[in-house]
Image 1 (cartoon, rainbow, N blue to C red):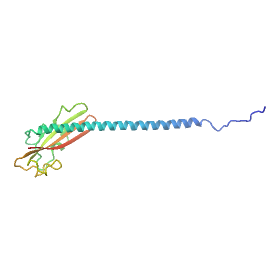
Image 2: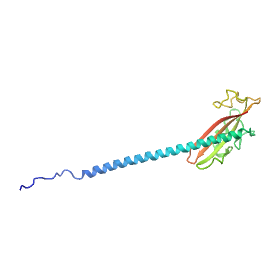
Image 3: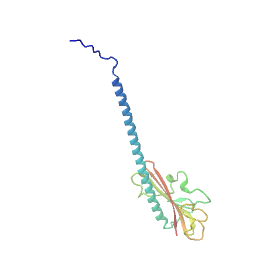
Image 4: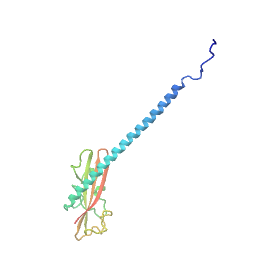
Length: 182
């Protein structure tokens, strides 16, 4: 019998362990990136759902305010009181455009709609003057305070209704409608 002349190679000294650890780190980083993406998508869908609820609530507020405006409420002589605002004088900005209006008052709240995740459900009805019922230039797409829309001499009362909704996650929606009461 011949003695064996086989001699093991001495070049490999644990490189397999290093390669496996590097692959493990890469797979872990890929997993973390996928989890971050999933969490971000979940947040985005939650925010979209909250905005949708806020939008639907604002639409309900507009309907509530239009119902109030249909009765031709008595408007204050100037400024805003309990959600009813006098016509802005001489090109002045509307009251709801002022900083802090939606937190300091002058608006009307709808406590029936302030439920669940809704922090604030508020609206304001602005008197925009009397106009002739149904003039084609006085649509909801233009400035209702224009002279052709606010001519005196009887006719219909024009109102601009602004609804504001704020959710507990910070989502805010503001909608406006033009409403005419013959």
